[in-house]
Figure: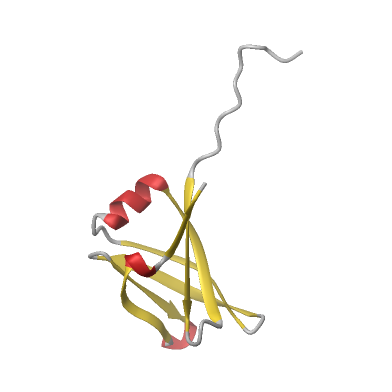
Length: 94
C-alpha cells in the first residue's frame, strides 16, 4: 500500500537548446538545467558533447559556451558554428 503522504519527485526542469548551420540542413540539440542556462546567459563557460544531424546521418559534436557566445565543433575539426551569440539559439523550456 502506497503512503498517501509520499510525493513523487518533480522531474528536473531543463532548457532545450537547438541550432542549425550550413543551409539550415545540419542541426544539433542539447538540454541543460535551468541553473546551467542561467550561468551560460551570464557569460559563464560550459562545454558538452551531443549528436549533430546532417541529411539523415548522425555525427558527434562539441558545444562550447563562453562570454555570451557559443561554438559547435564536429569530429575531424570541422567548425560548424564559431562564436555565435547565444541569442541566436532556439530556446525551449519545459
